[in-house]
Structures are given as structure tokens and as C-alpha cells.
Amino acid sequence: MRTPTLSKPTPNITTIAIERLVANPDQPRRHFEPAALARLAESIKRKGVLQPILVRPLNDDVEICDFQIVAGERRF
Image (cartoon, rainbow, N blue to C red; front, side, top):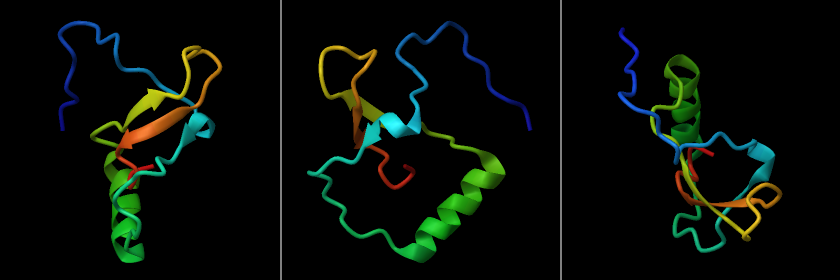
């Protein structure tokens, strides 16, 4: 399988330590089926994460703040 490459730098993609991520209290999905999560975890182990999660900073100083998950909480 060929790994896709970006044609130009993507400055809006950043790697953030998992410890800096917090769940969104307004997340509409409250229950995640254990079997479905197990299948997702197995898929991630085999293929990696194909779609990053979307987060927002919780304050103006992104160097020290935590980030709230906007989309992708199940993958988190």
C-alpha cells in the first residue's frame, strides 16, 4: 500500500500529547458500545488513525493549555 504524501506543508495539523486532551461535556454521544470500541481499537492497531481528531484550545495560551475534543471522541 502506498502512503499518501502532502503536496505542501499543512500548518494547521499539530501533534498534541494525549494528556492535554479533555472530553467535551456537551458531546451528544454518551454511550460507546464496547464491542464497537474494540473493533475500532483493533482497526487502529492494524491501520493507524486515518482521520485525526479535531480539538480547540481551552484558553489563549496554546503552549500550556489543554484542548477540548470537538470531533473524534470515540477515537480518543
